Structures are given as C-alpha cells and as structure tokens.
Image 1 (tube, one colour):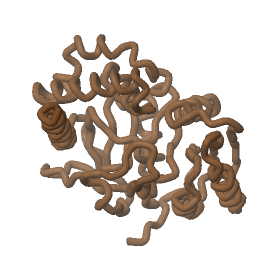
Image 2: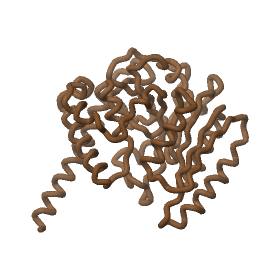
Image 3: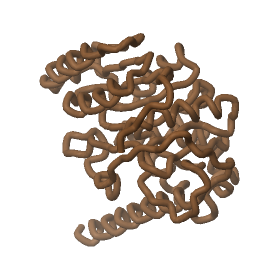
Amino acid sequence: MNFKPPYPLDTAILFLLFNRPETTLKVFKSIRLAKPSKIYVAIDGPRKKFKSDKNKIYKIKKILKKIDWPCKVKTLIRKKNLGSAKAVTDAIAWFFKYEKKGIILEDDCLPAQSFFWFCQELLNKYNDNKNIFSISGHSPFKILLKKKGDYFFSGLGSSWGWATWRRSWKLYDKDMKNLNKLLKSDKLKKQLGFFGAHIRKLSLLEAFDQIKKKKIDAWDYQLGVSRQLNNGLVCIPYKNLIENIGFNKFSTHTKTSPYSKRITSSNLTFPIVHPKIKITKEYSNRTLILIAIEFLKSYIKSLSNIKKT
C-alpha cells in the first residue's frame, strides 16, 4: 500500500549508526523518502581489534552525504569506540539536550513510511501526559482482541524503532539502581498480572546479573525498569511498522529471533483512530510466554550440561 503523508514531518529523528553500511543504506532510504526537517546522526567509533570498522564507517559517512532535502543536520561522530550500550545512551542524552521529543532509529530497524507520522501524531497528542512513556513501531503479534483503535497500550514495548520525550528519558536508570524498588512494589503485578510479574522479575534479575558481569552490553532492560517503576505505558500499533533487518551472525546481541525475523511491516491508514487509555495485556502475555519458554530451554540445557560433567 502506497502511503501518502498527511502533513510534513517536522519531528526530529535520531539515527544511531556504527559499522553496518548495508542496513544503514536501507533505513536511510526510508528516512530520505519521509524528508524529516531535522535529523541527528550519531556514529560510534571503530574498535581497535577490527580493522574493517574504519572502512565501514567511511562508507556510512558517504551514505549520509545523500541528505539532499531541506533538513537541519547535527552529527555526533566518535573517534573511539564506546560500545553498544554507552554509544546508544550517550547519543540519546545528546539528542534530548536539543529536543523535547523525537523518533529514535537504529541502523537495522527498517520503518514503513507511516511509522514516522504515527510517532509524530502520538508524540504531540500525549506530550503532556506523563502516563505515556514511549511509542513503539514494532508489533510482532496479531492481538486476539477486538480493535478499538489503531494502537493499544502496554506495560511492555520494543525499542526497535521508537519515540519518546525528554521527560521520559530523564527517568532513565542506566545502573538499574531502582531495580529492587520495582521488584518489591506491586507495580509489575498491576501492569502484567500475577504470572507476568513473576516472569518479568526473573528476566530482569537475569539481565541485571548478565550486565553486572559484563556478559552483555545492554541498555534497553534499564529502559524497561525506568518505565515500569514510573507506571509508564507504551503505545503500540496493531500493524507492525518496523522490520528488523539486522539478524545475522555479525549482530552484537541477537543473532536470530523466534518471531521477528519473519514479520514484515505495513502502513497505517490516516487519520489514526485513537483508543481510550487502557492496558491491553494480550501483548505482554504473549511476550512473557516467549521469555518463559527461553528460560525453560536454558534450564533444560543447564541440567544437560550438569549430567555430562
């Protein structure tokens, strides 16, 4: 379906890049088609042990020279590599020094055109509503529910193509210092139900342990803690607006995905139908079931390893 923009795109975009010129070009072509009036570009520096990084970053810089529409451009190009988590969080903090709200895209999150206007409309609509924490473009499930609008609200949400406000980012807890406060409260139970709260607790504790031991270089678990501690909700479209094109053996974290590798994106029809603000638990239930399955697989694997030894 061809998408016709309902009005100009005047919401700023933060484009997060590193060493993937192939996926960067695809995402850039989508941004170029949308013609945003402001774009912020952050590129992490090359790693010392990977000589190919410099050449890949050079190719990415050449792609950015194709910004040929009327557009204000700001860049944050690092000489040294900060790593996945710090590069992303520092770039978002830099972005929100200048902007009160905006759209955030990584180099492997390919948006349908309506994604940009979906984010813009909801950023404006919920600008003063502190209960709404962020907007997600990725929606992997067909919710088994009668639709009462073009999107729904959830206590969980993806950062594969998203948008938020400075007011939300100010709550970001990079060290998960408030994790225990969240776990001891009844906030997860209220948002996710009894079963969902327990699965979420296990996943957050596991993530905290992995981050502390520096086994993973993550930043999005911390975002979830910050959001749920503050009872924040995520707006998620019924139609998936983001296709993740970064799953391969070179990915930093996720090499494969049980569902997202197969899902394609499509466009919303404007004007958007806005629902009442009410949590839809079907989305979080399905997400948490997948997490529970992964826990079970990991547990069975650990038992198998114990038997072998």
